[in-house]
Amino acid sequence: MSEVTRRGFLGGTAAFGGAAMTAALTAPAEASTGPPFGPVVVRPADPRYGDLAVRRTNQRFRAEPDYFHVAGSTEQVVAAVTEAVRANRRVTVRSGGHCYENFVGDGAQVVIDICEMNEVYFDRERGAFAIEAGATLMQAYRKLYLGWGVTVPGGQCGGVAAGGHIAGGGYGPLSRRHGLTVDHLHAVEVVVADRSGRARAVVATRNPADPNHDLWWAHTGGGGGNFGIVTRYWMRDPAAGGNDPAGLLPKPPANVLSGAAIWSWEGMTKESFRKLLRNYAEWHVRNSAPGSPQVSLWGSLLIPGRQRGDDPGGMILPAQVDAGVPGAEQLLREHFAAVAEGVTPQVYVPPLQREPWFQAVRALSLGAESETGRYKGKSAYLRRPFSDEQADVAFDHLSVAGDVSSRGLLWLLSYGGQVNTVRPAATATVERESILKVLHLVTWDEGQDGEAHLEWVRRLHQRTFAATGGVPVPGGNCGGAYINYPDIDHADPKWNTSGVPWSTIYYGANYARLQRVKARWDPRNVFRHALSVRPPA
Image (cartoon, rainbow, N blue to C red):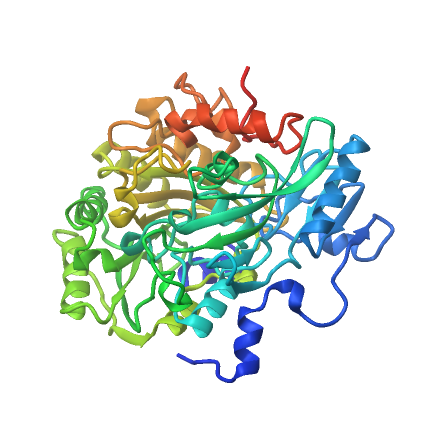
């Protein structure tokens, strides 16, 4: 990894008062003073074009459209889509710029950039919290928490924007306790284009009687860039009653107890490595019952490739738990002990730390400056532990220091718990059985051999799932892959020899319904990319 990216991957209470501040927090974006932002059209001759072309975290790709259209309101997005479609220009959209693949830049003639649509407020009319699609997760966490003492169970990467994160499902450190981000989706505003090319804004809600309900459902895990351009989400716990904003979304822990377990590559044998991975997964199999104290614990086992030199590096398991859970310290220490049981070399556990929740969020967060670089990521859901053969593949790829392997990473993130209480068909997020998320990742710097790094991570992923054609086909110990970590190799017969289409890997039995939603709301297939939902044949 680059030094900046490595710090990001391995890094890891106040109240507003006064009527004026309360009004500012509850007023919609349209109520802000001053002239509205945009629209701004930026063409290649404009000095701003270069900055917009590289405004993304994965520097492997660069968007070079005919023009960027930076929008400041839903109405501006409607006008931008109508203009582009009627001119027969290929349209893509960008909010945070965190896509793993080149879905924004690939073939785009017009990129609609909504980063300036970033308001977060309580909408009294809808009785839910509005989050505009350009708002970053950190902006949302800060406003929701400092304003009302609530949050959404979203991701740890603070620079990610709501636009793509929520549409793809959304998960993070609070998901084992509170479910996915989309499990709290109350409504969504989407700019769609009809068969004539006319764009309009549609609000679709959770209410099954809503004639637009299928569009809401598609945005509970159907992925971004498929049906239209999301401009705003409304979030509310479906089980919440009343109208008090402080009771309409989950309350985070007052304080968090966090720590880490660390193992060195020095002395780590293949058998011990198998044991480490098995212990970690089996703890999650045993401790993912909804409502149990253990679902308040979340961790992420990071296994970077062995480093050259005197310090080979090693594995690190940062974990945190709600400090208010009875016996929180014992729970965290027992977690580390269970994962370390029978593993050599001996585990090292630094002193635990206790801090307020929002401070812990900021400390854990991967900010935008830490996420940038050149990288390739490949994902899977894990329902049960890796087999010994799968663990051996990881060991063989990561345990020998090399120019490429030292930039590699296996990442296993806590999952399950409350996530798995929802029926697979209730949301577009079909996978509701897994206990871990898996990421195979490699990074490299400008000037290095990108093809060699791509080949390395592709082989790691392919050999891990060799028994199912090189890809994580749902079934057995695997649950498919996560659409917010898209991987075009899953649609490439060179890397997917399973005979199972990529759509099944990401969407399972929900894909047919997503296709019907696509046909209704995007009949011209305006919004498309390499892994977009295809219209029915």
